[in-house]
Image (cartoon, rainbow, N blue to C red; front, side, top):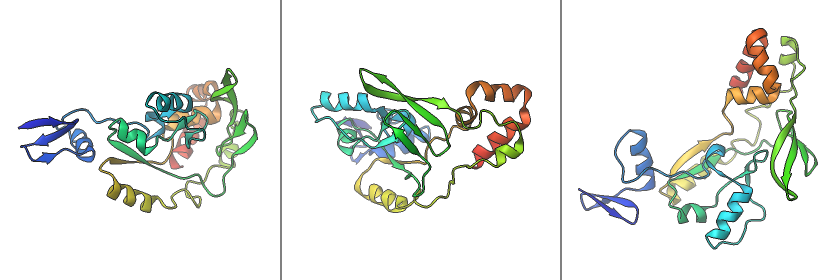
Length: 223
């Protein structure tokens, strides 16, 4: 019934299993020819800048000098289509854009503030940025709900975030048989709270200042 041809599954000698079909079947707990492969559809399933450069060189491609970052603080980059094709990746990400009016301020190559107000400092090795550590959590000193509510939060509906996403998704659906993965950014509510409040302070809040902890969790959830 099944015949493997160049990594794809031929059903009943006729129908080839495309990447989109493979992912859909796996999500429905159906047997596939192989497990679906993902690289780069989200921040958590992508690759860092240095590793990506080394991968390109290993595969015979020139190094990418200015990759597009999915997460600058973690130095995670978007994977180009040629690499996805070469590695038989079954997914492709549809990534949200940064807002038109953004908060980030870059003081230097070593320091910047993201739209949440979190301050980062570069961690380097041999002069090259590996990632950015959190240097200051903006809500670490907040002690009242009023202070929390008065903070300048990111606007999830800020102009620009979703501009062109519909067209991009439609174009990818027509031009590739990969499964499309929508990626609107980091969705870890707990992690976001620890970054905004500071890990130690937020864990303390969960024990002895639950009103602050719950209000922060609710606010991040809404965003």
